[in-house]
Image (cartoon, rainbow, N blue to C red; front, side, top):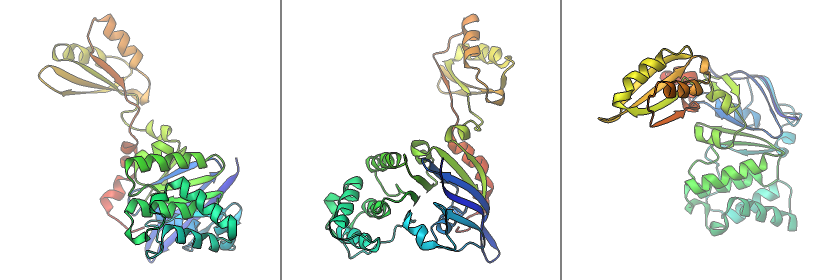
Length: 322
């Protein structure tokens, strides 16, 4: 795989505050990286340094082999950047704004119009193409920003909350578009919306207090959750006691939680040791003891639980505006 983004001990300080602390990572072509963290964790600051909008205090960043510090113009040619808020010119229409951006990118004549038409179709801007941008909804403004990011078909895309303000159908469309573009691009999505990561990302990095806390596939992160491979048994009150007693004695069980859902229904959640698979053994045991489970589910683990565990200290410490 080709490295498209390379960060080497990237650091940014604002006075006595270290917003980004020795961050190193590589993003390859074909990857969609979810960059996760609570507010103030350092996500936006890192992305601004990669895009050349902020100078690092120390360390370096490169895009497609071009150093951001020594050749920022070459980097910007290869980069599509959607910042938080996606600032535009409110008195322009999407059509005039995108033609303006195309000219800045060096396109004119038929090629300029071809590129504008292509991104308008991709992000479905046709119905508002000739309205002033300041009159558009938040969702349409976001789509105008997304269109300018894609206009020059860059090999690297960096997007801060790309689906912010979009309705569920629009989110689905944009996520499909991201997956489509990911085949030959490196895409970084900064977000705190965990469903976004599970929907489109092939890899996730969690940052907190300016430092990387985890770097793995979303399924690998979910496997770190306390309820990974936990078994939820829904049963009757009469069978709950015997099931809890028998299952609790199994060698692979670390803990059991019981919740009374109604006068007759009980939920029993069985936690395995070290996240191992125990559903098969539990099923065998229930059948052998002639105990009834109305339903039984295996839980995969929740990404938000892992996120909380890794970033809770930052949440308690407050927002550092990074």
